[in-house]
Structures are given as C-alpha cells and as structure tokens.
Image (tube, rainbow, N blue to C red; front, top):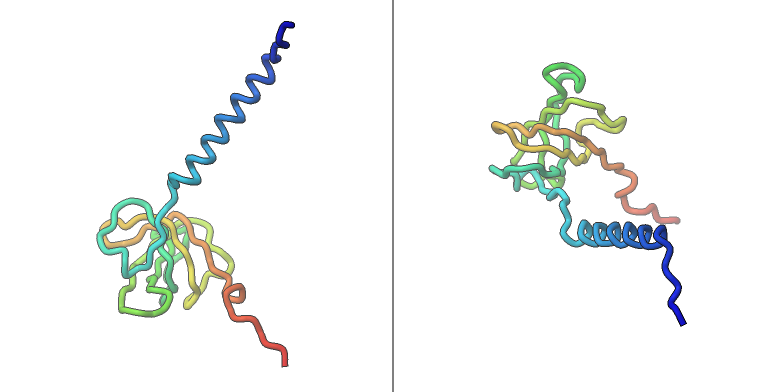
Amino acid sequence: MARPRLPVRLVVALSVASALAVFLVYTAVAGGGTPTIKPSELHARTGKVALVGMVQRPIRGDAHSTAGLRFRLRDPNGAGAAAVPVVYHGSVPDLFAAKRNVVVGGRLEHGVFVASSIVTKCPSKYAPAKQKT
C-alpha cells in the first residue's frame, strides 16, 4: 500500500509555523529586552536602558522644540540624592507631570539621559485598594 503524499502547501505552512515557533521561544528565553534600572544605578552604563524614576521640578522646554523637554529624574522611592538630567523629543503622555513616576527609554550621552520614549505610570493603578467601612 502506497503512502499518501503531503501536499506542498501543507509542508510549507508547517515549515513556516515551526520557524515562527522557534523564533518566539528564542525571544522569550534569550530576551533582547532592555534592562530597567533606577537613576542611582545608571552611573556610566552604556547602551540602551529603561530608566524608572520620579520627575522632579522644574520641567523646562517643549518636546517639539530643538532644545527638547528637559527635566530631572530621581529614584522612585526618593532614596539617595541621585537625579539624572533627561532630554526628550517626541510625544509627551497626558499624565506627564512633576512628582509622577515614569519610565524613560534611551541612553546616557555626555552625562545627560537622551530619552527616546516616555511611559507614565498611572498612580491609581498602584494605590492600595480602598477599604469599605
């Protein structure tokens, strides 16, 4: 009895699906993610990082001007006096303000963190639940 031949389309589809599965497993295991650190841990770190911290006053400039939006970022819990100057060009989230926790992605260049993205943490999402009385 002869074995039935698999259609070419099925073989190609299974090959593509296998390649995608291998790619997904590789990216999940190997990462390729950006390390998330606090301003006090930045020091002379090279390469792209995600910096998490609290925005300090004053906030100067405009994200769409040539000088960019400029502010300082300190550790979220306020520990230590480490504050990193940040410059950002691009779209600013609605909730961006002083004393707000944010995550900025970018790299340290000549003592200034040049951000390519800003994500604002929603404070109500991280607040303790209200107790019913």
